[in-house]
Image (cartoon, rainbow, N blue to C red; front, side):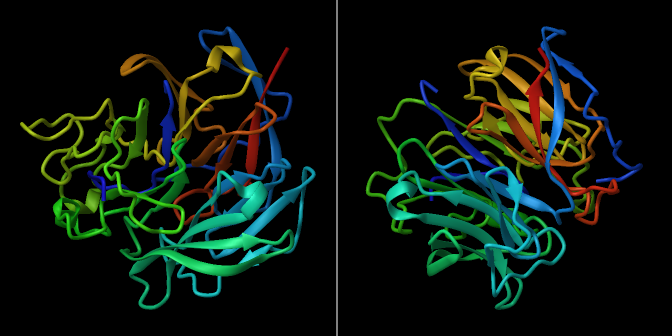
Length: 363
C-alpha cells in the first residue's frame, strides 16, 4: 500500500517520466465536422473506430497494433487489423456487472511480446462486494492460465471503480474506490480508497513506497456523490507522492488541513473524470506532454498543459458532442482514442453507442 487517497470512483493511473446526469442524446456528429483546440491552432475531426458496444470501460493496444477492450458485462473483445471481431476473445466467468461495477480495466504487461500477459480488473460474484485483479496469457485466440494477482478489494455497486496499469518502473499500480464506506480510505489495514504498487505477480516490492525515482505520477479522482451529504463536485487531479495522505473523507476539493494534500486541480460542479493519459504521439505536436482525461458527467475531454507541477492552462474538448467519455489513450498511430459510456444507465445513447473513437488531425 503506497498512498491513502480520497474516494477513487473511476480513475486511471499514468506516470510521466522526466515525466450523471443525462439530459439529451449526444449528437451524431458528421465525420466531416471539425473541432479546434489550442486557440484554433489545432484542428481535428473524430472518426468512429467501433460502434454498437456495451460500456467499453478500458482498452489497451497490443504490440502488433490490435486493440483489446473490455465491456462491462464481462466481455473482452478485439479489433484485429482495424476491424471489430464479433465474438469475444474472452468472457469473464465470475464477473458481477451491477450498477457501476463489472469488468473494468485491461492492461498488457510491458514484456507482452515475450510473456503474453494480460491483466483484468473486475468485480466478481462471490458476494458482489469485492474486486480482484487477474493475470492471463493471451494465446492469440483467448485468455488462458488465470492467476489471481490481488483479491478481496472491497467493492460495491457504487464507488468500486478500479484501474490497474504498469508504470515505467515495471510495477503494477492499482487504484481502488472507497466502496461507499468513506472512512476505510483512511484505514491503512483496508485496500479501499488507495493507490497500490505491486510486482507483476502480485507480490509486494521490497522498495515500497518507491524511492529514488525521477518522475511525476498524476491521477484523476471523483469527489463526493450527492447521496453522501457532502455536496457535489470536488473532482480532482492529483500529483501522487509516496506516503502522502490525500484526505478523503476529511478534506476534498479545495478544503485544506495540515498534513493532508489538496489537489492540483479541482472541478465543481463535477466533471466525473474517468481516465487520464499523457499524449506521447507525434501527430499532434502541440499536444506533446499534455494531460488528457475523459469526463462522464461533464461529457467532455479536458486537456491540461503542464510545466512540471505547474498548470499552465486547460481547455474543454468535444463539449457534449459524444456524451459521456470514459477511456482516453494515445494510439500507436499517434491519434487520440476515447470511448463513450452512454449505455451505462446514466447516459442517453445515440443510435451507434457505445463507441470507441479517435481524434485525427485536419490538415
